[in-house]
Image 1 (cartoon, rainbow, N blue to C red):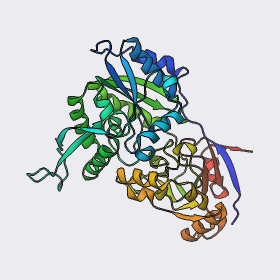
Image 2: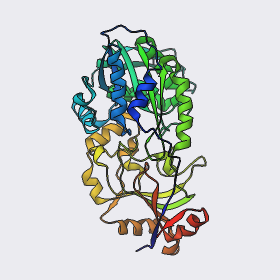
Image 3: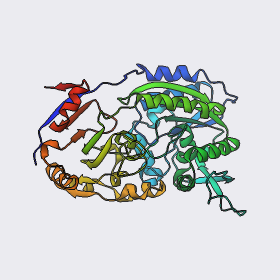
Image 4: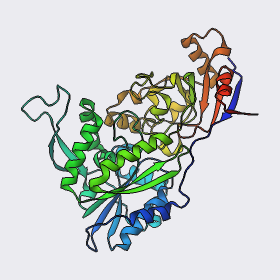
Length: 413
């Protein structure tokens, strides 16, 4: 089946910071620390593809050096990048975060220390109703960071791809899961499966703050085009409340698909630099169920097809199992060890399952059309996007032209 298609452009709020390094330095000046010269500070680095991360991290490191501290970088990635110290260090290199660029050491290790055991005060039945220790979890923390005099968090704040709450993906998640490395991340995700994300993350974060010297954090909010919109420093006691405000802002700046219903959505590339699940489930309406919209989510996307992986994801195709279809070539790109480890650690096994694969896009269209039962090809609602971070230019089938025109979007000629 060959479909007639057209392209259109949509615009979003593009507020952005012109000089991220200068903005970072200015924000860091707002913090007041009780520190001594010569002390060490572990600065966290994310596995996500964060815009302007190099000048932002340089701004943080330079500030601590000017205070007479000895900063060093620790990957705070949980099990990402294959769950090895070498691969996490390589991922930072790929982002341009090298010792020569940052002017400080990078200490990558998957080793953790157990700072104690925490009895979770959960709200759901079946997890903590006994008098034994079944509701206690060991609190793992990155060994390198634990040996530092202080810790400072740097991360993007955004909607989580699976969990919802006043705090989702950001600084506290990095403190708990990122710095928990593979061992801690697996434990925390299992605990989260029994209770709300916000309930667990607040308790673990409070426990960690009682055990380490957390100076604070730098929250990064990006606009709809993935550019730095806001930088905000927060003292440790203010992180939770500050992160709630930044999350509300981040949600207003998210890009969106301008359709209520899509039969088949082609995503040209997925990857960990795009989203934790390869593509943002908030964008495609699959936050609560891998294969359908629930709880009033929009858009309603009946089928998703993946056409490739980003180079930055290095074979990690976590999230591929949330698609119904993919090109056969995608399966040859996948590093299954990385993908399965990521899915298992996140307690999201279905994210690593294999969709139906076909050699060409046309064959995927034919297969999807048969499953959905549209009476005629001209009624088939198909959309192509680059990825869920870049939704400015969209290709759609003719069945969607009237909806696009009525919504006031300009069709590219």
